Length: 456
Image (cartoon, rainbow, N blue to C red; front, side, top):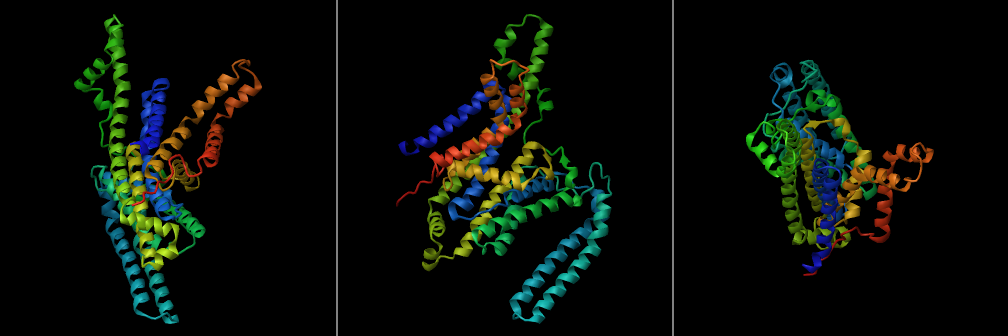
């Protein structure tokens, strides 16, 4: 218990800060922050598995997040029957053709020695395959995107409950990570970082521009929820009675019947928003706890000790007979799959899929800051980093406004300095993030909750 005291204190402080937001701002804002903190925690666990366990630098996090979001669309949106009728068969043939090209190239590489003839054969397969792919898919894509483009213009999905997409998102991200890992994991650390970042940009560019698959920048809205809708809750008698019971003291102060009804109606509207976000927070907490248990078990298992040995000294681990390449590929896939789950969770919470919002050059490094601040190699630290950094990212503006008003309280409201500071509030987010990271790196270089090695 005593050895985990720092973890307990850190989490109590973090939950206390979120509670203060609920008290001084609103519980709806506090629960929104909590939900995104939990989603960020899942992302940081995925990144921590790759970096903290194995020392792999993956700057392609946003690409796997986008694949998780795409999974939410392909799983939950009902199929667009007209689009399938005009081009669905051709798109299936295109996928089969791509698979045939891949297996053909692999067959040639495995069964023929490296000669000019083999290279010509591979080039011929690729060129003919691309020509056929264009002939088959081109007209089909145009036909699909022409089907009511204002609302659909894509094939749609399977019409299943959106929570299935959390598992599918993991498979999508893990599958891409396997392909990337086979190609790029042999690169040196800095080249691997560049390669994964560029591949992430490619993935997002494909999702943004292939309207037949995901509507691209037109976005997909109105995705089904795994929790009740606010408008439905507001009409439920049990929910109205629940809100009335919780606010009995406030309602008793109003004597006029009409005013009491209006107040109750307003409380029900506000309560429905809080209740929905509370349901999301409950679902996300379950996911975080499950992943935390699994990753903790893995970290202190023989496999986890082997991964840390590989991280600390690849040559020594290789000399002891450990397959470093295979283990790196495995952990790269596992970490990316967890990030894919987070991507599906985020789209589930938002209820919409916006490919334009996935910006690797911005948000990838925010996730890495979370891992570094929390403590790489420590799962509890990674989760705490997700909470702390996202909280500061969201609350930087309100905190800055409070500090500006406090320190300029003696100045006139039209004072030029005061107005300039207030206009600069959006930039205080980056200032606070930079100061916070500098302080952590100066006084806690291994993170708030550094890695703990158990000697057995």
